Length: 282
Image (cartoon, rainbow, N blue to C red; front, side):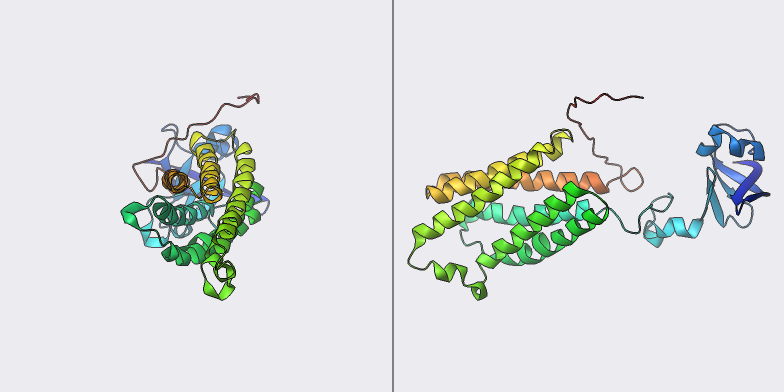
């Protein structure tokens, strides 16, 4: 802790006030001249006025606001408020997708001998469907076209899947006595989603290994389930279920990577980037 003077810039004029440095690249006192140097960007110090404010570089923040950014008393550290008025929606959408995919894939894999998938209707309609759709809309608000397209689309997928098993829609009732047509219809349905997901996969080839694996294996899952319906092959359907379980855990992994930081956990996810053909300048 070093004693120094802090400079506040605002309204076209500046004034000096006594303060204490809580972080600095060196132990030299902070002064007005430092405010205009590149090194001052890295300085963090508090004012002597009951330490009500904290200065990060040339910006002043209320310490109470910094705590509010992390949920008030649950604060694991201090950081400037987000530049947006809402948080990152991607972990929410990925988590909704992961849990719903996990449940359905366990049924498709015939785990514990369960073959009736109706219990997935609730999560598919509300968590994987509605919640993921909302997350996708917020991705669009954040100007993330890919995130908005992917999350909103799969939110629609889960809601449409839930509709198949809701009697009010009359979908399964329409195929009574025509089980072969039902299998073919579900095959077309899943094949369409497989083609769409393979298209999204092409847009993840310069991201990370985990993110690319998520979409690639999801496309494979849709394809296996589609073939299983067309060929009435239980083995193929079970294979799709097994791959789907893997997809669910990868989605949870990606969600965790989006919410875990050094400020809230000791377990940080290491991101492995895929090769790119673009030149990077440092």
